[in-house]
Image 1 (cartoon, rainbow, N blue to C red):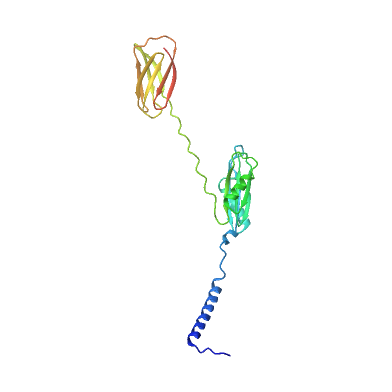
Image 2 (spheres, one colour):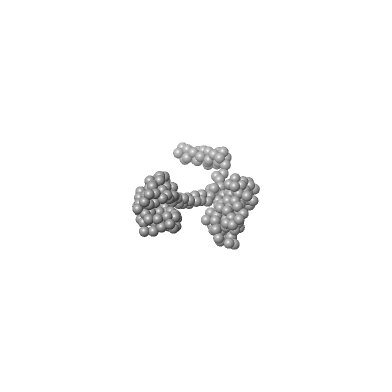
Length: 240
């Protein structure tokens, strides 16, 4: 057997043995390194439920992500019910990928899967027989990627302003029109009756007493139009 007499060489070999021993011990403590895509080994499920029955049918989606298929399935159904869905059904399940559920205005509900979220959504849409009102109601991947929340519905347009009311009474020498604002917005208005035209300011929620003097009675129905620059208008008839 050959002996090692060189002190430097003997020190290098000893250091190498210690390093190998330490590495083996560390591996035993920590175990093997998990693969980078371990999260993708789970399951994702997409469900759909009804919000109403008559067309255009409204639907809601539910999503479940879990390590077990049955858990993902139940989580998707629970999510659908929690959002108000009725008759919730799981339409797509995928392990290590993405799933999506889509519906249309006629209540048709289908699913689609793919390795990408976009692909799952596209496949779900493509599976619908009728494309009217197509929408993806649930989509997600087993690694946690999900469909971004839908934008809020557009706000309802403001209610139209109410036109002013008007009442009439005969006065000495003519006619008085009592005009009351209902819009809540001050405006400049015009009053037209046959060949009579008057302009006046109408304050918000107030009454203006428009006196038309002189005015000759004709003892017949006469059309009156009141138009204001706040976008309101009133048509009326008075016998004078």
